[in-house]
Image (tube, rainbow, N blue to C red; front, top):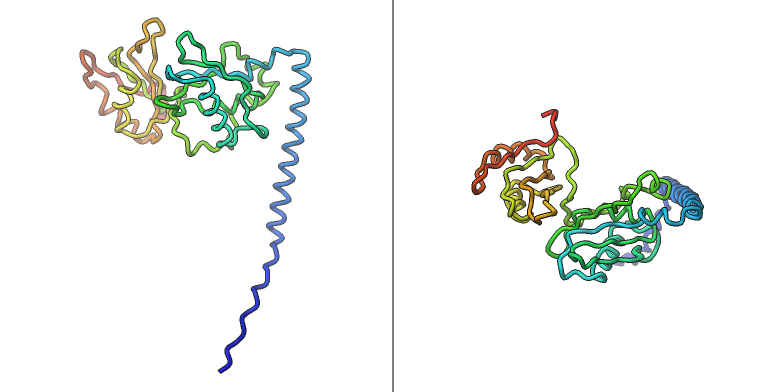
Length: 259
């Protein structure tokens, strides 16, 4: 019995017209985006020509929550790599122009980016885990939104991929599920308060309000959980709970919530 010969390789499947149409639309949108990016860059360059110092506050970021042993180079490398990894850079290469940790307390730094857009993207990293703590990322005190909005985006790029990052935001937005936690011992640390909260679920945002004159907390904090369904459970279990000589007050921070 004669065996059939080897089959010829399968013919290639022609590319579908629909696929070509989608690729064409994507290429067109990318070209349009670059056109507007170039146009915005021209406006920004002209504005800075007449106001050379205007852009610097919009390119700078305050970074707090640093451990005492953190170096300039270490923080710079961490943020540079984070920007590239998450798609926060506006062009090739690392985006940080300068990074300086201040020795007064050596727990904060000012980081300057090469563009306003990249500085705004860095704001997405507020609360990101770094070494043994979480970074507090803020605008500098001389940041002027009315000026910055002319120079570039003032909010992070929503397409940045933050899914792999360990982030607990340090600014708790006013939502119906924002919790006020009062009656905390003033000598409790952030970790101690979080240890009390984390058994209920992952935190989305947390802020222990500190007294700058003493270095201790003011005895209250705000938080929000990633799963909003645990909010009522936290209130029911922690409100009125004794902590040393005090009793906790746990309630929704925003009045007039719909629940």
